[in-house]
Image (cartoon, rainbow, N blue to C red; front, side, top):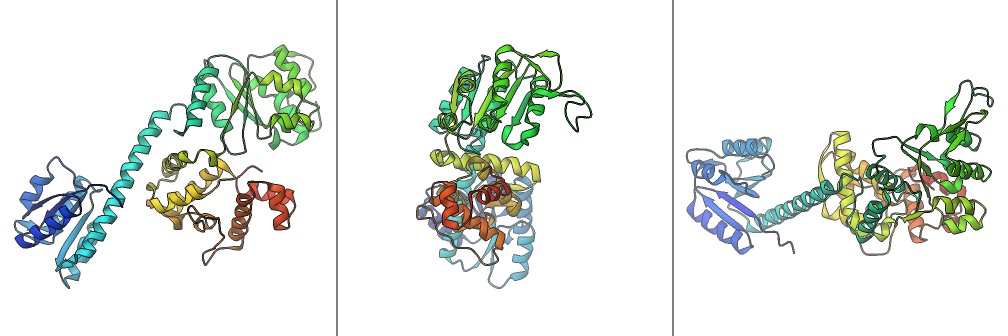
Length: 453
């Protein structure tokens, strides 16, 4: 039961109705003030903003519609419900056009009134929660890290420890957990924060170009090298170089990277001049480093050179308390980007978000929220604004796959793949086996969904 206490203003010139309606509202646990005309209503509204106004259309000393317009001009967020005689449809339509939230016909049906107040309670509580989340976000916006869970508090403390030094660090965690966000936070909190931050993803660069991207090349160093190009170390000079997916770097290049880290200067591909640099290096991998070393994908000496500090980022399913805060953060981000007036996530939609296991972690949530903001356009995000594979979730229950009518084949395929991954704990090999696909197909599909495989 929602216990949010509302402040309600009743404006009606019928004494009996004012008395009965006020008693009912008070019995339902709310604060109520009742007045009889426009002038009294204006005085009651002076300096205060009730959560709800119940206003008769016909009033002494002026029109209820005029009062509605004045209230909306003062604060358009105050919901105003007009009360009108049964069958007075024209006035009800005029009221809705002028911004009324709803209208009630007399004699009042108090079951309907109670339901309307309950809906207002939910909206007010959601606004309060949304405002609270906004305040929390404003308090942590400087480092770009969103979350109040214990694990996020520990990561912030570790960043405070790491940032002032020039020590290297390895960030570990599943794809989509925000390793680059943390790397940027370390950079911004360091004395290099006003210098370049250069990010290189070793898994996203064709193998033949990795060396050129990181170390640079001279004109003519290889076919297609029509001009000289600075590498990541040169571009990041004075600042921070973030090497994402370090275990995907060709093993043949890792000794050269180790040597450059130890010597502090690099030679471009095809060049002879040693170029000094002053760069802090942060690296990341979504693999278990020990397993990557055993599999021959990561040199042990390079790992220990980089691993002065290790920052382990938890998967989103292990920090479910942060889902609401992250969702609000993305509502703000994408509301501003797409110029949409979305307040936040409504309770039913939030429950679906919290029931999901988020195999794609924060990156998946970010994509879902951008879609939801665009679909919703204004007001609160509801379940119908979420992708079909989330709409079919049963909060607190076993994940099921129930697709609404009108779902496209592409959406159904995505829903089936994501639900299967949830059920098998993001084990792509097992998901591929159950779906009759190969692992490469699963990975390609995930990338097409905006999630790293």
